[in-house]
Image 1 (spheres, one colour):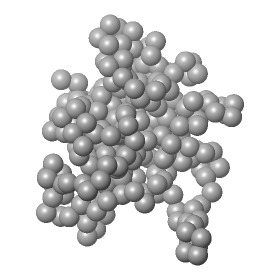
Image 2: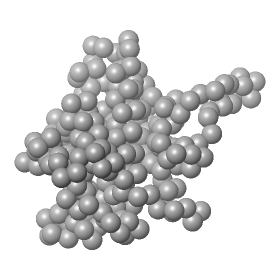
Image 3: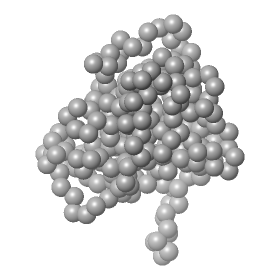
Image 4: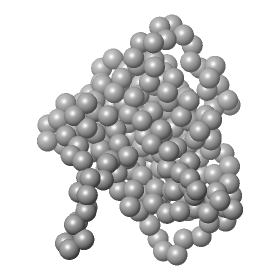
Length: 227
């Protein structure tokens, strides 16, 4: 989470830590002529977002849902470490409905189009899936799941990857994409669990990016996502 340093009630201002590298959205779309993120950075950022999201969902005594997770709300520090911002939009989910989010009702619309769960449930996993797809494609979220699915089916997956990165590990990027598509399934029950599947899988890809696995086959850890 981006750290809250202080507040000024008189002017309605909140003071947060300064994030030197701006938002993930700015970096993905190269605003301000910034350097492209390496695939290693992208794999690591995915794990950091999943870690932060799980922290919110496991907050005690009541879990929190972000409601507006998107690249513009993911900020990067001087070392390109990703932190979730705009947590002020988060809402409490009472323990009685924490495991049955479909029963949770909102009093007003919140969130950003293209990142909002089509079933309008506050799991945040759908939004995460779209963000992960953007991490590897640097494309607009509109219709992105369809474009990636078609590319995989047609055997042109390599062509949809962000061309600013020239050394993509195609096999690992494909596993990353399949995990992302699972997160972005239209039905909540078809999405993988954040704590037991999504986070462990992104952590494995992060370790691969750091060269900790060598020729180790990470596919067996996410094989259930490929059926």
